[in-house]
Image 1 (tube, rainbow, N blue to C red):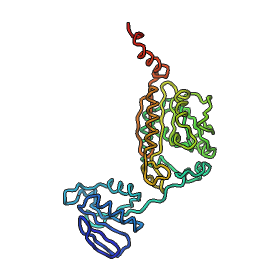
Image 2 (image 1 turned 90 degrees about the vertical axis):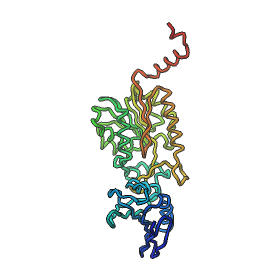
Image 3 (image 1 turned 135 degrees about the vertical axis):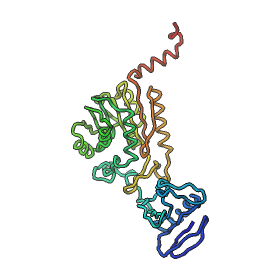
Image 4 (image 1 turned 60 degrees about the vertical axis):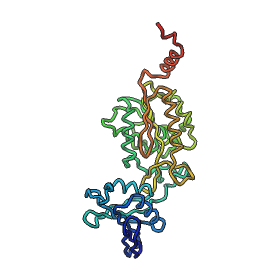
Amino acid sequence: MRRRDSGRTRDAPGGTLRVGDEATPRLAVGDEALIEVVRWAREALARSDAFELEVPDPDAGVGPSSGVPPRSWRAWVDLAEVLACRCHTPERVAAGTVRVRFTPLAPEASWHGGIGDAERYDPASSFGAVRKLEHPGFLVPLLEALGRVRPPDGGRVLVLGCHRGDEIEALGALDPPPRSLAITGVDRSGRALAVARARFPLASFVEGDVNDLPPALGRFHLVVAIGLLQSPGVDDKALLRRLVQHHLEAGAGLLLGLPNSRFRGNEVTWGARTRNYRASDLSLVVRDLATYRRYLQQHGFVTHVGGRYDLLLTAWRRACDSAEAKVGRLRRRRTPDATQE
């Protein structure tokens, strides 16, 4: 392993380090174990605002001579993510060798820290500027999830916490898109709803609190709630009960999304983080996801958990699997004589 470091050249575990006059630490990666590269990178970040790696070109199909498997581009992108860095466009420096520059990501978006609702939900805020559907890690899993609970043509769809209407846009991106949907969006931000109305003039929108959904909303063939249930002030378990009991048709589908990412500048990093913790911590997300899934399964739903930057819980049941039908089955199981002929 060869390393260049502010005008000095020195040996390091796994090889020789090449040093130039530049201030940016640079490491020529050879046949050393990845752990040595990670340790060096952490040391470089502790004393510099960037570092560079010279690595075998993954597209050249040539790896280290020691038998270490060739490392793909994915390996270096993953390294950038776990070190909270941006991976810049590689530069070819020699036949079979490329140089990759890594720089620390911007600080987390302020709205992760719980700034005021008025600022967060303003369409002109940094949160309002987020375009999740332009990130493959959001878009593709969302389309896959919607495909599992696809509403029928002419069906009714309820989108809770709709903000500017990205989930409505995603419904139209299904292949083929469901036809003639009657879509209702609910959000507490009037400014966000103004944007949604302009984008989707055929949909209906209600400004209000999801904790107090009006009974007149009726029942729907699909209910979508992404990034909502864990929001401050939302009684998630009570809301889920009301949706299942009062707002779902017998054969309806449900799509719940829990945030599993953080925005840092224009980059997205994987992993939910509990407030006041520096490292990602999925314990609360996993706990809540398991609670929702268990409740839905107890009420006759088939469930599936997927997603990446949002963890997506989809649930559906056949039209015959209504709550009344499930209660009837449970009663028959508890009274064996009733099933004997």
